Image 1 (cartoon, one colour):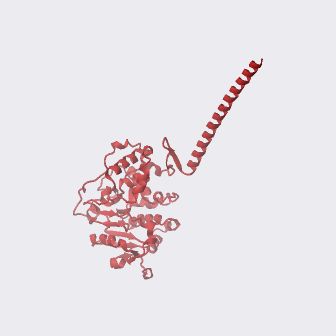
Image 2 (cartoon, rainbow, N blue to C red):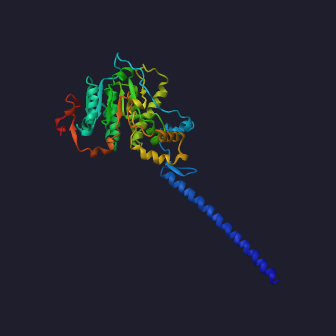
Image 3 (spheres, rainbow, N blue to C red):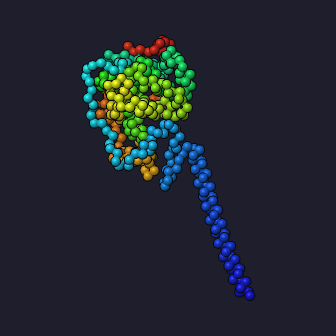
Amino acid sequence: MRTGRMLKLKYIGCIASMLFVLYLGLRLIYHSQITEISKEHMMQRCGISICTPCQYLHPAKTNEPLDSLRSDAFHVAQYKTFPPIKTIKLEDLPTSGEDRIEKILHQKWNTINIPIQFKDYVKSFIDNHLSWKYMFWTDQSTRLFIHDHYPNLLSLYDNYVNPLNRADAMRYMLLFYYGGVYSDLDVQSLRPLDPMIKKYSCILAQEPPIHSIVYSNFYEQASTAFMACRKQHPFMKNLVENLYSFFHFANEHDSTGPRFLTFLFRQYSRERGHIKTTDDDYVYLSPPEYFNPTVDPGINNQLAMQCSGFACLSSLRKWQCEQWRIEGLKSEPDTFSFTNHVWAHIAYQSTQFLNQIDIFTIWPGVSVYKYIKDERV
């Protein structure tokens, strides 16, 4: 009897232990699921998505329709099949004939006193284009211009919080109204642009592939640092008319900058279909080697961090990491390059430029819209 009772207690103890272990297991699974759900919920709210199996974090896609630019939206091939993106020589360009873009150079700074480190870059444009008109823009003259010629956009312009937005928007308005070439101050002219403006009626400069791939996960991104277009070009009109539609995007690259420009360029190209380069409405996206031949050295750290999560990268980014590992970053322009962007990131460092020089000292023949002498301080 006693032995039977002991056996019964032993069995009950075993069953209780098993039930307890089962309870702990179910509890662990439950909490694991809750933790995963909470983690996912938190990451979604923070705009982060989870890459498995390595849990490498990257920004979630939240900017439709701009997300369609990204490489994984195109179902790109495996990174090893990507050919090198390089132009090794200049295309055939006319040496005579009519100009298809006005010979006007546009540049801008806060006032007519520019940082002295950009003096030689400004002078390089003037020296290579002595017969061109040089128009310089300040915050004050730009606002006067918009007030006079785009009064319906003045409130939009004033309501941009980021000065980068205003700088982008004004160049589209200037080129639509005047035509010509717009260049940031940290761009150096290496040779005359005359052959290019005889062949094309609108030119967009392409960023180095590594820039758009690392920062935006797509390729063939247009740059806002340099562009040229005839006045009244329908593409420039399209950019100006879409400024309101993209105002809500928080990132300046999406609302007025390179991704805004690239998205509308692709849309314009699709809608126009195949048009010849001789068509006055054609827009030419030039090879990076023409106007942005060198890479921003500041991208190195970003690239190293991104490539450390190699297994979770898109095919295009994997390919770019391989290119970077093999070739490094390009630091010298090509012999046929027209300009070189030195990537000074002017808009982010404008308050740090202490030594300045009057634009009239560099080029007395400069034209400033509705110039007021009080501005020359």
